[in-house]
Length: 493
Image (cartoon, rainbow, N blue to C red; front, side, top):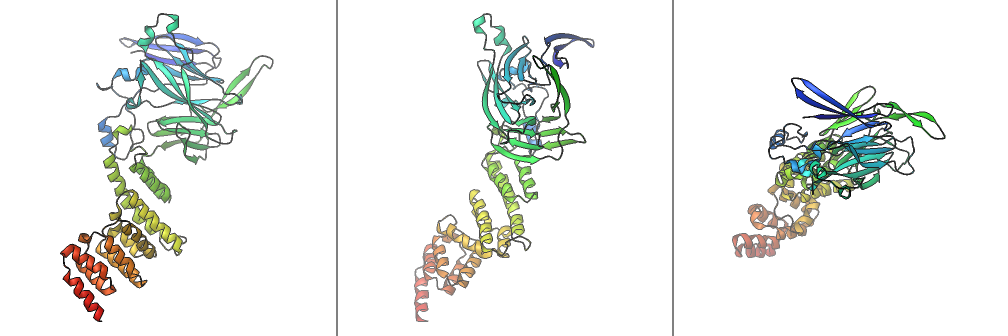
């Protein structure tokens, strides 16, 4: 099949080249001028629609999936991605971004001009959004394709309406033709409050994630709605090249401007930045990698927050996969496994002698509340008392705060059973405080069939908790005689 290419000369000439194979190694080249004074400084073709196969998902459990650009499967319905056959390309000039289609005829279908009050020295940067088959929406042979354009610190997210080639071929009258501008601004926002900050590059990594690289060497990660997700500093700017801007009219002259187009690119989950001294490669992390990265940076709040977001399906299991590939039950299981793995490390680090405020009761209570809150959020409070987690609490300065935090959950019936060692520690703690009534109230709220009968009977006798003693024996053994005899004998001593 034919291949299209667009070239631009410094003098302003833009040429459309069509390469058509004729067989026997012969290729016919047809070149057509698209404008003699367009002065294109950068161009980007709309990416082809891609899909992800089940085989790729199974082979990449760590969450790194790249789009498949290979052979189209039989289930890949051509009607769902009409823009692939139209040759859509965005041309970036000094004063506007032109959206062109090359088929069935070359024409400009949209034009995004320089916003008001934008310095003439500011050049635009742009990037198409990725097109996953499962995210494409086609209505009446028209596909909405998204493009992000950044002028200075102002970001514009546009929807470009692309009509199917066959629909255009049916147009035979003037009133059937669409309007000149087939784009619509969906969202506009500023990635930096300082209006003097400009963008040198932009990359649209996923349907819900845009990266903007500023001239202050900061990488801003945002949603298409303008919500700031993260930002990081770079110690070296990307490479730049100089272009000439010629002035016409009363003030004729030329000016050299810096341009950073083509120094930042992306593919799948990877972002490449070409700097004067090196090529840097960045990667969009899956939720599991993101959790471990934050943990390694001692950002425990961020690690647990990401874990909760993954459990609630608020972040993609794989960075660039549609949510239809997410198995919610499997995700909950995996996030819970990682929570159980991380909490002991968090406790050891937070309660070690090196940790600041380790002897502060407020700090100890805060640690207990955080851990209890996490397991409550995961609806797995019973796992909190496994030896790997409870053992750390039991041998730390946080033991008292942790045991006292258990009581409200028992009294509210959120926790109906406790392991033997936890029950023993709870009784010993409140007995030392001379407050055995708390334990008695807890026993009355517990599932008595899950308790160790011998342990509870011994503890109740030892600390005079006769209401709890009677409650256990009557409920479990239907035995009313033993509690009465025990209370009668206790009254005689």
